Image (cartoon, rainbow, N blue to C red):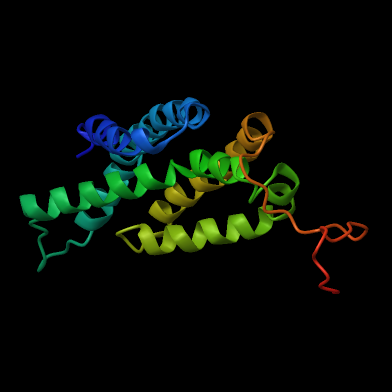
Length: 183
């Protein structure tokens, strides 16, 4: 699945692209390429950085009466869970830029809510890591916090113009002609 992800994203693109306008396609093509690269980077990080300590932790339950004998199925199950978990969390900057493009988030909003993002990163890490040890949870929460910071920079650089605007009305804004709703 990891190595097939470029082909999978290409097939999704071929399905979606006929329904897009030219200016939407110009935004979507880099989005697909960057999201593929970020997913593969996350899977590689999960394999080379997080998987070895997670597997050592699971093998650490040994004593005179207990000898760990993981099966190939358990080994691949742990590896695949880490691949997909880290592949998905590395998509955070791409998703934030997408949310910035449609007008749901902006740089001041992300900066203001940084403390909540750190808390959510540790909650997500506690849920997604397959082992209960703190080391693996920090190995997931750390990149999440770093990716949130990258998201702030990416939103400020790439989401300056929005495709749609979901902004609330300002205090002095007059209702449109024909709209008589009073707030």
